[in-house]
Length: 125
Image (cartoon, rainbow, N blue to C red):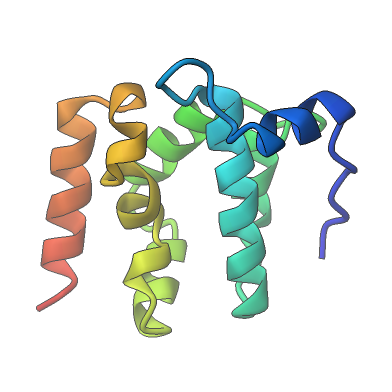
């Protein structure tokens, strides 16, 4: 299990305020949400370490939350999607939990949402 860094006081204050800037959430909020999603996966016995490294700023592989989600969304054979489907938790895929969540609409393109819907539909048969 990867140790998670302590949140900064500024981050704690933002969370206490609902984690929002105006009416829209931003990339930092998405990365916080991805951290929460990653912790849920760990409780299921799924450790997506490479994905974690793409959205946590202290990691060498950091590319940001949006780029990390898009990378996984458009890459075939990442394994995480299939693993979560097998565990009966399609609700915890980045496709469902993030890309198709209206909260994050402003961060993802229409073609990202179409791809997410397609992947979920193909695997629900």
